[in-house]
Length: 174
Length: 207
Image (cartoon, rainbow over all chains, first blue to last red; front, side, top):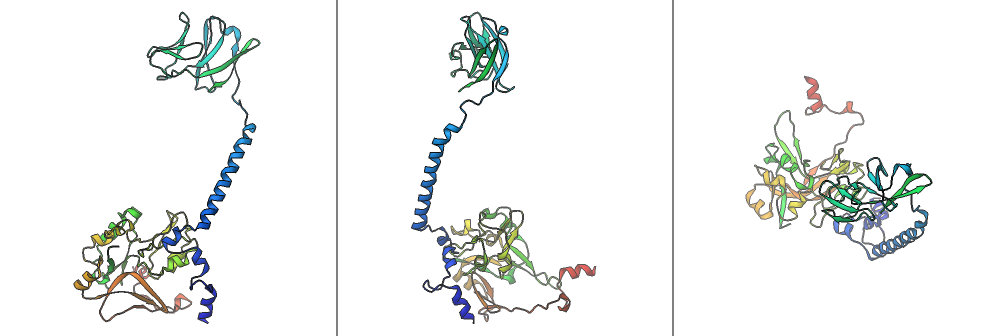
């Protein structure tokens, strides 16, 4: 009786070890052993998933909206005089920005946060430059590029446009 | 493992709890003591007995594990359950004839003595054996134990019909060749059992 029960749990040609025990060995070495077939399975499945993921990124690109940033009305065009500046916050209330209408009439806007140590830059009418009062950093109004003082990186640019009689911030330039 | 074996001499235990404290300081299960310090017949005696994992050659805890979580290393040490696999079913806790595995509810995992595997795998003594002042827990060579002790080390057990071989030895008198633990038939109702004079719950009721 006993031997019959034992025999039924063992396979015929594998030296007395039950099949499930071969698949799930108690020994550490057996547990860590990776057979050639498992390795090939892993590589095949892995490369298949990589291929699928690549195709998804190729085709899903069209599904993502290119510009999803909010449009913010800053005020009437008259609020920003020639050779004048206006402060606003964009895209959130924690991001101070400055809009400038240059003497030539162009409309530009930048983040007010100096790229050196995050002081607020101000517009200097006489020199037509953006100036950081903390360490005398100077940025050009055309590009926001650093032209003097400690800053080495340009100011973050905000896209700004005039629609009819109103000024709108339409996004950040990355 | 540098030719050294683990020996338990229950008669030498003085119940100082040093092993319990040291076990909790082991790096493989930091802060949690895995050793059992059993009190024997506490009504009559202060005798205590330490119980570490015996590391069976065919570990029944691993055999009954449905999650394939308990593994035996090449040097014969049965490890705690693997955390990603253990399903906290407590099969091993029930199955172990020595009552070693503990289900740790706070980790949702079975943990047990792993002979301080970080230490013993590099030839150091397990923590409990380093601190035991009376030599009840010893990690030494077979020649050394035979030279210094009166009893002989035995690692063969018999639980009813079941034979168990263990990696850890216990010291027994010279006449003994195998530790036999006979099974008692438990009556279907507790009322039919003889009153156990060492039942702690009954002792407390008497007060």
